[in-house]
Image (cartoon, rainbow, N blue to C red; front, side):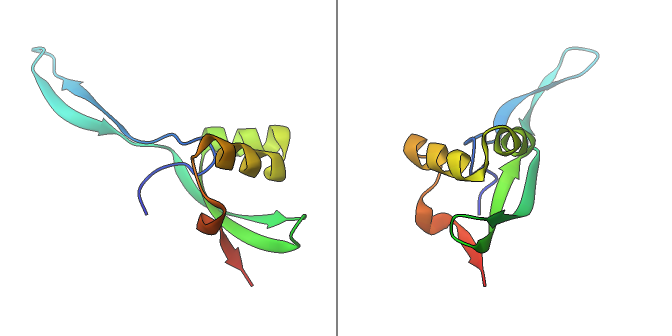
Length: 86
């Protein structure tokens, strides 16, 4: 799976390393991703998501169900992408 947050859609961006002599070489700014398990109360199951730090704060703020619905509406993920743990 690529390094993309399933809740916020944040992904890696490309920029430059700039040396003291101002020479520029390409680099990547990666996302602060975590693989986290959440208890999904509405479905009475555990799910696994790849979530960034901002995604974790969003889940804490609006709740897991609302965050999942928002991510599906904005096209960051599909319901079939949610990994359910039995």
